[in-house]
Image 1 (cartoon, one colour):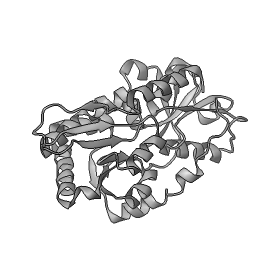
Image 2 (cartoon, one colour):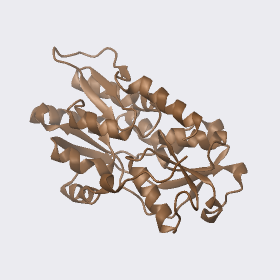
Image 3 (cartoon, helix red, strand yellow):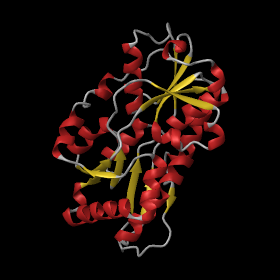
Image 4 (cartoon, rainbow, N blue to C red):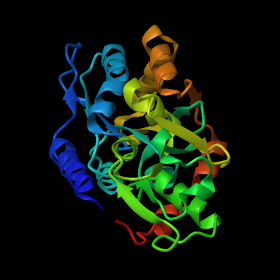
Length: 288
């Protein structure tokens, strides 16, 4: 990984490895501790903070309880924190669902819109189609992220091998990968629609997404620890659905491209279990 990649990883570790991202302000806080909302580190710390403020505030208001938002330096640490019970509510990718459900988390809602895999490059790069990537530097988020697995699998279907047909550069997050493309550190990044939509307009104007042709992918799911009790779980479910109907919630879902909430059904559990082996099959090929 290049020097800038190491700097970004260090920055993320300093920001989020031990401390909450930000505390919610005034709410009718219960005598008990604050609810801990853990968000998978699919984007940079500032972006995660900014985009989830409306959700955090809505939950605190509806539940009359303080809500504290956490993330982690990478997906491996996020998973470890979740399995250790450090989060009460989690927003997690599809391949984490089996292990979270098996360890006491109840899935409540998932985002309505599926993820689309986008290949993003600079407009000035000369890359116009997939074949133009041969011999280039391609960025993926960290190796336990869902998009690392999907992106690597897509590259494998092309018959390409890292270190021979392209150079794979692991990035701390989707946002980091997109900024690395913008700065010329790497040639292209595989990412999803929400991080693309959340880029500042002056950055996005210099980039161009190329559709990979991969079918839509499962989006993020919000889960709650079962041991909070049935009453608390139901209240959180109600608060989430109320947020999706509010003006703040509608703006949130429009800005992120998530499209709203859909109730998590039994069939979604079975679909999620298809990804149970993803983390075991994830590996680190030759990288920068």
